[in-house]
Amino acid sequence: MHIMEGFLPPAWCLFWFLVSAPFIVYGMYQLRILMREKREALPLLAVAGAFVFVLSSLKLPSVSGSCSHPTGTGLGAILFGPCITSILGLIVLLYQAIFLAHGGLSTLGANVFSMGIAGPVLAWAIYKGGQKAGLNTYLTVFFAATLADLFTYVVTSVQLALAFPAEVGGIATSFAAFAAVFAVTQLPLSIIEGAVIALTFKYIIDVRAEILVKLGVLTDAAVGRLRGVGA
Amino acid sequence: MENILDDYAQQNALRETGTWAKLLLGGGAIAAALVSAGPLAPAFIAASMAAITVGIARIPARFYATLLTIPLSFAVLSAGVILFLSGGGETVWSMPFGGITLAFTTGSVNQAALVLSRTFAGMCALFFIALTTPMVEIFTVLRSLRLPPEFVDLAMLIYHFIFVLIGEALATRNAQEIRQGYAGFGNAVRSFSMLAGTLFVRAWEKGEELILAMDARCYDGIFPTFGGERGISRREGVAVVAYLSVCSALALLSGGIQIF
Image (cartoon, rainbow over all chains, first blue to last red; front, side, top):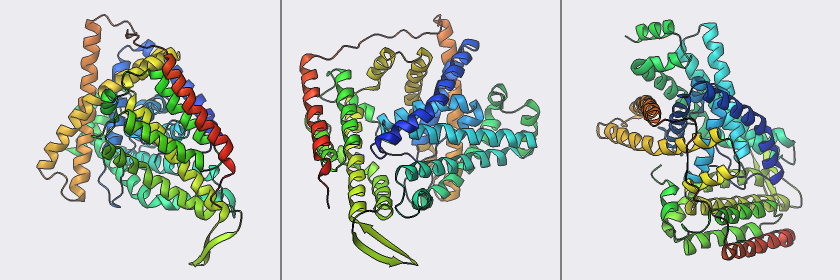
């Protein structure tokens, strides 16, 4: 869910840019280190970024009839970790603003924070936690993607509520109102996205599992086990 | 997805105008709309930006109108929330609704009108940049802003791959559609996941091919690019300054003009 251009008052635009900045700077630093160590990282990150962009511009099968797109950043975070994903998120959001008119330039900071930082960090934490606890991989991916999507939407509602608090009841009331208005589309959307990402993960394992092993997402043993279950 | 705005940016009538001039014009208009306290200045910016985009840059009006419906749903929903939540002034209209009273006041009408007009001004200015400035020229600007070269290289490569992958995605989707892949909700979810999975694997293979190609051409960590950038010409500068002065003067002076 993108906040449109011009929607946030200038002070809040600036605030969210400042909040996102440290994450982006740290992500840039990580990117520089990664590219120095592995020369082949650049093209692979580029295809990943383009993948997130194309995935997020495809229409999901939707129940409520509204226009719904997957965010794809949950998958990015599982594959590459949250720092690099925040950089990919920044570039993708910039392109979405300029190519597709989703989001905007003055609201870029706020959108980067909700979609490129908050969601991916949660997805990554859930995936790592689930792997450590030995939960079913597909179930973990499902929850990581679904909850990252929901969290993105909650953060966006908070951003809107902070900028436009209600006269009676303040920020809490206006958060409830914004959350309720967008819940109709966002709740089913996040569940569908979770299912889609989990299935996508399965297809990648079926076709080219070695990519996931190389990225350190899964171990060889885990791939063998998952393939055994699928067969 | 078929409406990639960059296609229009490559062939609009302002294609040869300086990049900096177009970015300053659009960015300045967004800023002027944001600082305005009343809805008049943003409304003027929205109208004038639309006029410039359709009239001077020669973007088809019908296409432009369908583009504007994208932000409409978000803007109207959110402005609706603001209408009922914020307050101040006298009550204009109220209605009991399941235990609570829905009401809007003069203050909330003013606030909602401001936000709605600001969103439209912002979107029109953003569309102006999107429809007149090709991405390729923005890369030179990114470089001259001294952003990290890794970041600019990554942005350029992502840009390149977007077009490669969109082609793949459309072909796969058409193939699925003619085989009834999107008939029924369950089928649609399964087909979409298959599409996403295949797309990722294909993308990955393209990336591996690019590594080979780059190695074969002695890639050493930096993409050389042509510096096709030029500054602002006097005529462009005068036009941009004149337009932005009108916008900001209007934004500063018309703040007191409200609906109520």
